[in-house]
Image (cartoon, rainbow, N blue to C red):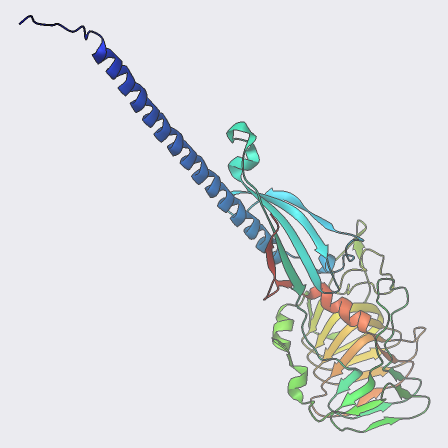
Amino acid sequence: MNRILRDERGMALAVAIFALVVVGALVAGAFFAGTQEQRVGENQRRVQTSFGIAEAGAQERVLVWDPATMNRIKQYPESSVAIANQPAPGGTGRYSGTTYRLGPNIFLLDITGQDARSYSGAIAGGGGARQRIGLIARIAPVEFGIRASLTTQGGVSVGGNATIVGTDQNPAGWASCDPPGPAQAGVRDNGGTVGTSGAGTVTGVPPVVNDPSITSSSFTTFGGSTYAQLSARANISIAGGNINTAPSTVNGLCNTNDPYNWGDGHNPAGPCGNYFPIIHSTGSITINNTQGQGILLVDGDLTVNGAWDFYGIVIIQGDLKTAGGGGADAHFWGGVMAKNADLSTQNLSGHATLNFSSCSILAALQAQSPISPMRQRGWVQLF
């Protein structure tokens, strides 16, 4: 038989090339899939880092909150406060945003965070990550439970031209106040005698409320806070004695280092108009003039002579006494709580007036009260 030879030259080369193409495609696919997975992972890491920076920025804004200025911003959309671009805690990135006031005690912190590489533009193709969150917070003021112009344990003697007024009133010139609220009692005590003589008067709805629930603890425990805790937070601490208080400035700015500068309630638009300090006196004090505002804590007695005005909250562990005359009708705008530890009689005489003012109380509380995130529905991811 004749042998037939077949021409098979070149098959190995074709098979080899085909195999190389297939293997190359598989390798290229593996590299592509791996690269995509790496990019997804990197992007996810940047997103999570940016998210953490936004959260950290929101918490930092809560911690460094300045009640004296932030608590008094106007309600949205009338105004808002920009949060300048700044490094995040730990230096892992940067954040910025805006603070909005949504209601009398509610604020929204709108924070956008970016990790360091995204912010610097080091990501190829102009990519990067950012996360924006909203944190709803509220002012957490101390609950003093002030429901009268004067709250006391003992009796009250009102003589001369002294007046205790429970009708809610806004101080003259305070344009930022809301409309006055419902009238309160003139005097709230636990059953002591409230007497008047001369031209002295007590008015309110009703003029006097006898409240057996008033005890010594009513003047030292206020909701979740205590008198000792408030004293520890005081901006100003004095030993007592005879003093005069008046606003003071340095280079046109309110001089908060002056222990006898207690703000400027007479001139709310002035340099010290927004200064509402907590003042703690470790002993009895006698004040002759001119004015103050904020929260006044007196371990002993408080005696006021002449025309001294105070706007805010006064808590006295001893007695309240007023005497003398002066050009100003009102010594107090806000609420006064006088414990009179010896259950003596509160003596108010001369040209003294105690006016209940919810606006003054709220201003003093807002100037010293931090904010805290809402416990429920206080956080949202905006995008």
